Length: 75
Image (tube, rainbow, N blue to C red):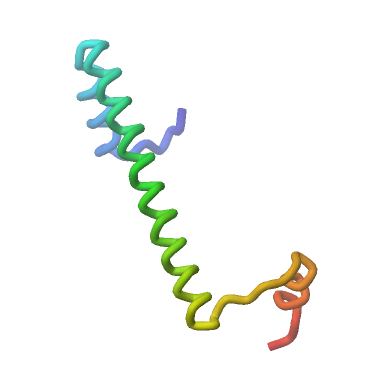
């Protein structure tokens, strides 16, 4: 395990470890669901921003080779 766990995180871990096993499992399930929900919200925000860029003509299309050329091009 990481040696640099913050004291706040360590306190949270200690509190959870003090709970009965069933409650620990519930905490894990709740955190996993919340992480999934946060990731879905992030994906939705990215999709919205991408669609807006397409509508505004700011999105660019091309192959991986096109991307490489653009990234390596002199400004």
